[in-house]
Image (cartoon, rainbow, N blue to C red; front, top):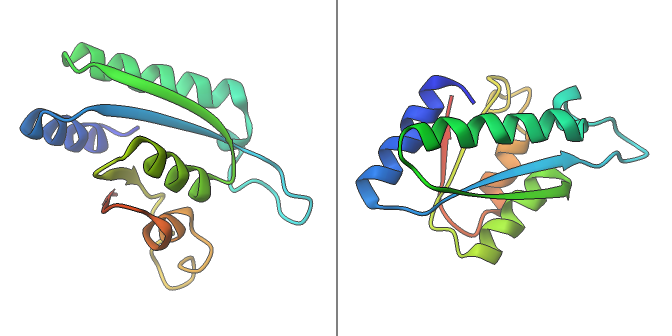
Length: 123
């Protein structure tokens, strides 16, 4: 998680007294297509990212809950948001997901289209 993204999350949580749930998704391999990134395919790397994010928010006095799942990231993100009754999904994008070339296949675009709640994208 980049500093800019963390700052946005901290501001939202503090301003609205929100509950913060950190979700990590280990992408399951599909026989037809490779995982969208090496990091998302490694359970250890995903666990480390989750731990780092949790530590960052704890330092700011923000309590977090964590959820770890496996599956296709966009679907898992939206399913979990629905399960926990999320009011907002905050997520980053890797820079090319919202361009015309990457629009149809990006995780970000899929979440925007499938989400049960508003989605805040932080570049």
